[in-house]
Length: 267
Length: 324
Ligand SMILES: Cc1cc2nc3c(=O)[nH]c(=O)nc-3n(C[C@H](O)[C@H](O)[C@H](O)COP(=O)(O)OP(=O)(O)OC[C@H]3O[C@@H](n4cnc5c(N)ncnc54)[C@H](O)[C@@H]3O)c2cc1C
Image (cartoon, chains in turn blue, brown):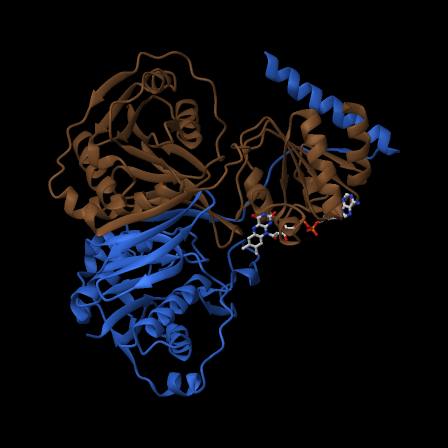
């Protein structure tokens, strides 16, 4: 029986290349878009499963504007078999709760017979790491957060390594299930014909209606969290600048500050 | 009007996580007119020592959910029973530490209760009875202050973001919450932990009183060794910028900043660190920041309390002599 994997990918701005407008907002025009680096880790794990099981189909899924087709094409070039873009004006401005709702509606209406969902641990533009957990809850399935490698897999279950700063675990999980991965910055070599396949594979674009999503639960209006303000952090400290003549003088100043800090401690 | 704040008291290896205490510290100091309640999950009767500690962390009331199925952390089981507690007591504010478990648990609770969640916050306040949660975004280049249209206002908090205070004795009321555990064993059967290997933990250095951090201005790994020695002499803890970690001069566990740890030291000394925003967001809650840099115009020199123009390595050597 064909093993069905869904890989969720997000197109994100390249956060290493952010420019500011004069109003301290992010200059969005001309900002490079890339596939979220953690999602490439998810694609890699899906490919590992495919080579282990053989009979396996990997679908890449993204929610976003039409432009996000580029990220999906990239996912196909890297080895996904087909791709879906969940695209609707009513999805714009979705927070994680609303996003997970949209993704879950897609799963319920289009691939309820999936075996495994793989997500990147977090998106680099939001760093919230909420969507995978939120989606797993919506679908009522078990999950492992932050896997680093696949140990063993068959159609019924898989065994994963989770390696955190506190512990290393081997966890067995019964399918259907969701795993998110902290693997990123994968050094991909696009398989022969990868880009050709990406150009010739149709990406299915689905609207809110196509996935039976209630639009009161999506987008800006369906999102409970709202940004009150976004700003460039400014650090306000009143600086005392000391330009000592020599190192002795510098270290004397530091010693007195350290001692004052320690005294403050005692009372 | 009083706000009811509910805080998850996370317990690992029979110890209360620091971040839980940091959250209570911040809430009791900064939220006017709030009652602070906690909740925790356990599989057997709490030890006497833990009981007495629970009475000393500034809580008005603590809810305990006790059941043998809560032995190991299982996100599905935990989120299910915690959601029941929240629906039952309906707090206005719900806070958890953004720990490994907390970051997995909170979104499931939020999805279950269909409420908004702001993750990994570094500041919290109450305005008009509403939780305003601030977090770094866009790789630390921006801060966003977020509120939620739903109740409770729900946030996870970065470990180390708040200063842990000493609490006055309080007459903490203890309440056992009876949750419904139907179907819990079927859920537990879906995942099985085959093995766990705990890694040796360096004790939590992020809220020590004095932290001395080094950056690229330290020039070499050898100078980091000297920094460690100096820290031992002073009773401080060492830290590093990401650039120094990337060069292998310092281990990643001691990286400070957006992709490292947040610190709330009384005194943070930055030696040869330029002061990139991603570094500075990690020390925004340090009480005093002292920077040593050869470049008077380095960004950090205008956002520290004391900025000393000097060579970092020479300063380490001079200080080592003085404290030996
Ligand atoms: C998404 C993202 C996340 C990031 N997360 C983090 C993070 O968590 N933490 C972090 O630290 N960085 C982070 N960074 C990197 C950050 O942008 C900076 O590159 C980094 O902090 C610089 O480290 P540094 O100050 O040690 O080095 P530099 O910027 O190279 O600064 C070295 C400083 O040392 C001074 N100096 C040189 N010689 C001497 C001397 N002899 N004595 C004294 N001073 C001297 C120089 O004047 C200079 O100011 C992140 C970046 C990105 C894009």
